[in-house]
Amino acid sequence: MTATDISPTTVGVRTVDVIVIGAGFSGIDMVAQLLEQGRSVQGIEAGSGVGGTWYWNRYPGARCDCISLEYQYTRFRHLVEEFRPSERYPAQPEILSYLQNAADKLGVTEHFRFNTRVTSATYDQDANRWLIRTDRGEEYRCKWFIPAVGCLSTGQIPDFPGLANYRGETYHTGTWPKGGVDLAGKRVAVIGTGSSGVQVIPEVAKQAASLTVFQRTPAFSLDYGPLPMDAQVRDEFVANFDDYVHKSRTTPAGQYTEPLPHSALEHSEEERNAVYEERWNRHRAIDLIAVYPDLFTNMDANHTISEFFRGKIRSKVTDPALAETLSPRTYPLGAKRMTLNTGYFETYNRENVRLVDLRQDPLLEFTETGIRTESGEHEFDAVIFATGFDAVTGSWLKLNITGRDGAKLADAWADGPETYLGLMVSEFPNMFMITGPGSPNVLTNVVCAIEQHVDWVAEAIAHFEEHDVQTVEADETAQTEWTETCAEMAAYTLYPEGNSWYTGANIPGKPKVMMSYVGGLDGYRRICDDVRDDSYRGFIVK
Image (cartoon, rainbow, N blue to C red; front, top):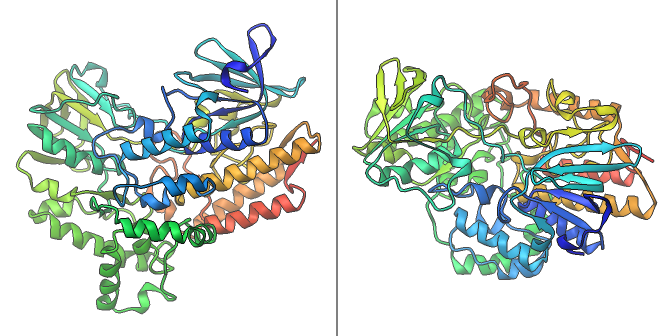
């Protein structure tokens, strides 16, 4: 059955077995596996094509922070054989091309309705079906509802005073125009120095007449190239692919590294710095930030690697005062997402680049021609918002989801998201989330996290259909216990110290809770498999 073969059961309503929202890595994989089971599937995607995050994030310099060979599907071996990335860390166009090819080869593209946004998803408890409405006026009915919307797909711009008054060009890195932007000769501002900021800033600096960076919080960042992909390395990876798959599924981050067996504090400063330097030169973040087992649990241990990173900033920025302004000191390394860059810090040595530290010179308002801070007004032709996302929960809440007895997901998560295993929510039957809050999601190689979830959900649906199950949902007690477990584990780490999007601290009014499971993808996988093997313990199955 294709997207055009869906048959109506009532006037204006088309019925399928499964609705999948999103056409990124998770949506493509989920649709492919359900089609293999012979189910009728309708995918819905807001963009004009597949790609998910990599469809929307087209800004100059956009690049993945995971090595290209490790950022691919592992279940589809013919795709592994074909995949020939040109760089060690893939740029956005190459990732998008990979996903477009994967969707076509797997036969899922025709099962998506593109340029379509879901406006509501409502559970009909009398019929045990979900009713999905879109901005095209379409209605779909399904038994299984799977939002595969991603953790970083709802961009956000802070409510800056006077923003509506600004008459110049504005762009958000997460919704960059498809045809690109000509910034040559223009006065440009970039607000934000997170992951997208540190990538876009060096590229904008090469084009603009002047660039002013408004820094809210300085970033820890690892310079990763760009580095070309060595053909021999690629061939060896493919030849030993089974070994990679095993390691990716039995390591906490879905990426294999060799941590040292003792605390960072057991080494002298000279010994530690030699270790850090060797790991730095591997150009692979996990090799560096996981080199000692206590870097994310012991503040004193974390200080050693944080200072190593600050030393790298001092070595790259010629002005010592500017280097200090660019050096993070208010949070431990890793409590905010560590970024990867290409020449970010060196960019501040350029004559056409200026840094405004908003902690010292606060932004007061936008004007018609630019931005006014306490020190004065800055005029710009264009402003780029690298201000990040309403992460982990934002994309689910945008769907306007209503469960049993009128329960709203927004209300259920008003004090922070509660899920069972990041897979399901009590009072929302037959709705599976892919890498939802309460799962390892963004703390891992996200493709590995996606594949684990998609495999588990596909197997669960096949099992429930075989046994004529009508409804499945999270048990409320199991959900509460899992949410408490996630919070308790996070409290033993340094993640809550970051005031980052990991905890929702970047969104005013959003509950501040750690939204990811910090126990590692390997441990999480064992828990999910144990739940499955114990007759889906913690789920209400009817």
